[in-house]
Amino acid sequence: MVATPIGNLEDITLRAIRILQEVRLIAAEDTRRTRILLDAHRIATPMTSLHDWNESKKCGMLIERLDAGEDIAYVSDAGTPGISDPGYHLVREAIAKEIRVVPVPGSCALIAALSVSGLPMDRFLFLGFLPNRSPARRQMLASVRHEERTLVFYESPRRLLSSLEDIEAELGERQVVVSREITKVHEQFLRGSVGKVREGLREGTLRGEVTLIVAGRSGDLEECSDAEILRHRDRLLREEGLSQRDMAERIARETGTSRRRVYRLLLFS
Image (cartoon, rainbow, N blue to C red):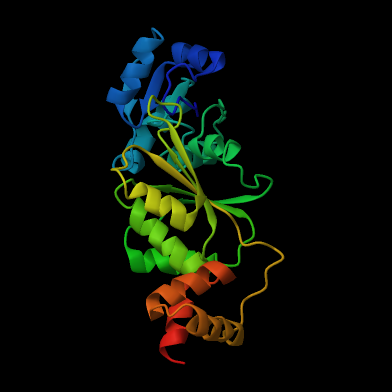
């Protein structure tokens, strides 16, 4: 299992280059993308495809060749195979046949993003890609509302704004880091409160692969009670004259409570 660069083609280890040169076959998630990497490092090893749609069917052939004593390398499009990428079925089948499986470590987008996030890295929870649709996404986010570990997601740039809105609604005004195009020409890191980052993104179209990091719930914060939320409401009614929606957003930011919970409470109180 060979890790490959997530962007910059120089981010490949000497060992990975040697292994890719020495094996009899390279199984690749996308042979066209892997060809660019192989050509850059003058690697002429034959390739075959192994991706989400053919992994179960193709594993048998690869296991037969491995069982016959051939060495095969597997690479995903970028980064470490099996991390929100294909590779799991091949590894599982090889282990079942008592075939030796060896990691050749290297780049991984979630680790690269974490290393420069400025958020705690001693404990984190990686949850892969967020669900495509908002109801499922909010349900998943609600399930980790009390998680104190740093949260890491992969996300599509097309859904990033709506995902940030759902994060603000379900998790409150957390600190977030949006990592875009890591190690590539247009590498970018946006840091700040979820509301601030979301507003900043409205100014332009976001493109490229995104790793989204969200601060865990602070361990010294207790769940805000309904009574406390209503006390905030009463204060804001006296001082600000905000609309109910704006008031819900303000209270959510101040208390770290989900905007949806605050809004529902204000509606029915």
